[in-house]
Length: 481
Image (cartoon, rainbow, N blue to C red; front, side, top):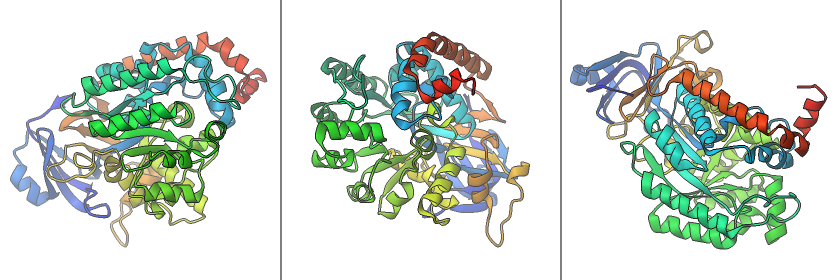
């Protein structure tokens, strides 16, 4: 990454996220010294005080805003993009994803993470709420050297080979597996929390209430509280989980977690779409932090997660995430914002639900707060870390730029942007993307290595995948795809 002795971004259309809205400054500037933002305001004022910066970026015709926060993401699964779509929810995990499990090696996960990070950062993501296995290697080989900011957690569960022979029977838990993964999660925190010049933070991630015993769930929560860390968990994520919870506990995931004292503001709950309206209100009343992944869940479950409902119910903390590429096909927060807005409008039959300005806040300031990082990033203001992105507003699909009667920049970003408008990405005061080129990663190498790794997994898993006989496998046999 390229470090400059001071950066001045001037004449940009600033969306600072200060205050309750977008905090717009039509001709604004941002001054950066070291890792921090030191001044934000009208160009003439900021440039007068910081005109001696080593690097000056003329942002005329560009939007300047905080980097996007992807609140729930599994980049390591990027290698399986396109191999698990268009199937019933109950088949997704067990018939399209599970057949690859025995063919994936740790190095494959690292290659997938590199691909996912490359894709996301080029589209403006600066903070990753990453959950997965082998997070130590991902931190060491991808997140730290790539220069991005990441809130990492190693998944804790008691699922091993043979745990899930039938979705309609209780999963078999392996205590030794759970203990090993709990140790790995704690080792991740001990080794990597605060590394990468402070860009890397680590928390705990109990996989889900259906994936582990009550005893282990409670031990993880107790440890998170002891360490002063958030816990990031999958909650009520579909019919398969609902079956497991009723078989084991005779109730729903939300009611079960509440009964054991799990729902509070120390919990980031991802998905939450297999819920009643009353359960969503309960999550909000308990102060739970909600991570919604509308595009992924629409693709996997055919359901719109209750993001707008959660906020209308008084939910304080919410973020959106791209989840994983085998679900929605992308790690692009600009796409995710648009999908989230449109799906929630149709869910409520209300075109005022989740307006563009709110989606931008959920992807920046409010997303950062939900991950516990709101004091560091999410807005452009002095004292925050310098995570800043620039988007070209002169592309045909982003034109025109109008300031009256209503500024149209925010709607154009949310409903028209694709990701290739991002020209520059600054993270922690360093240029990670400059003139659309990633400075910290060899793009051609990352893509080539991801292709080879994906082929190794997929081609060795052909027999297992086809034997699982998913809807997608049936379509392939018929020559439809």
